[in-house]
Every structure is written in C-alpha cells, then in structure tokens.
Amino acid sequence: MKLLFDAVYYNNFDNKQIEYGVKFGNNTIVFIKVGFNGSIYGYNNKYLEIANKLNEIYGYTVIVSSNPSTRKNPLDVGFEIINKVVSYQNIKEYNVYYVGYSNGAMIGSRWGYLYNKIKKMLLINSPIMFNWPYQKEGLLKSKAEDILIVYSEYDQSIEFIELIKKIINNKIKLKIIPNTDHMFTNMKDKFISCIINYLK
Image (cartoon, rainbow, N blue to C red; front, side):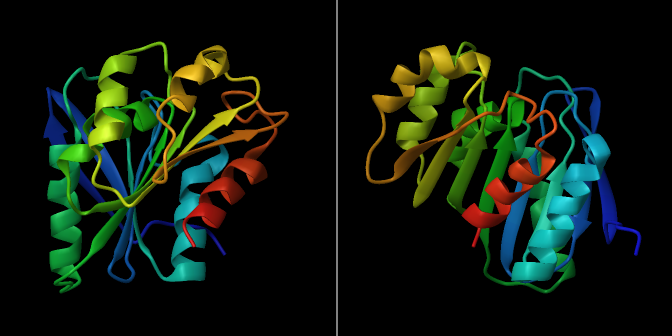
C-alpha cells in the first residue's frame, strides 16, 4: 500500500512557503519540524513513514512541517495549521507533542516555551554551536512536562554535550544513540524507532 498524507496545507511566512503534511487522528497532535530546508517527506520518505506509523499505532494526529530558511519563529504559523486541523476534526481539547530534528530541534528549543499546548518535546541533534544561550533559555522556560534531548554519538555537537548536561533535571533528559551520525546514515530504522518509542 502506498503511503500518503491525508491532506497537505500551506501557509506563507517570512516570504517563504511552508508545507504541512497531515494524518488525521485523535486529540494528541504530533507536530514534526524537519531539518533545515527539509521537506515533509524526508529522505526515502522517512517522515511520511513516521507519520503513518504514529497514526496507525497510537491513533495520533500527525503534522509534518517543512523548514525553509528563516531567522524568525515559524511556530506561530505552525500553530495556525494545528488549529485548522483540530477545528476540521471537531477536536475541542488537545495536547501537542513536538518533535524536531536538527534545525527543527533548535526551533523547538528556542521557541517551544511560548506554547502552553506543548506537553512533550523530542529534540534530535539540535546544533548546540548555534544560538545556545537562546536554546538554553527556551528549554529552561519550557512548560512541557517532559523533554528528551537526543544526540547521535558522532554528531558534531557532541563535543559541546557538557552544556546540555548542566541543564538536565527531572523534566529535561539526555540520551546518546551509539554508532550514529547527524544524519543517521544507513540508520533510518533507528531514527524512526527513536521517535515512535518516545511518543508512546
């Protein structure tokens, strides 16, 4: 069976078009922000596969957002799409689980605290070397109940991992995935299982 999104939405932000692939489901909304300039499908359709699995296994509504280059916060317009999706499904109350990869993780670290609906955050291979003070501030201000920061063993940011360790607490946790690089090269299944298992 060919994997497809149920719907694709678009909006404009900072003179760029952002695309959102949607799988309709229940009132837990998984919002996935992909890496820098990434598409809603990802290499070898990995994000489409993740969206379908989360929907099939847990019944979640899944929204995958593309990530065109911008220096501004793109999550306000992301939440406009979330609100459209929940309204279309006649969902009154909902929570958001945020998943970000690379630049998408940095966006979540920096600006996720602004959104009370975000209850969980999974942040994979955020580049610590860029805007760390802002990422740190955002993580410490976050209203999410659980934050898991994940790094590949051979990610470039691993040399700065002590900065992350300094902010670990009951809410913010750190996980290192061995034998993987930033892109999870030839490790697609490991990347997918990291997301599926955390969002139980």
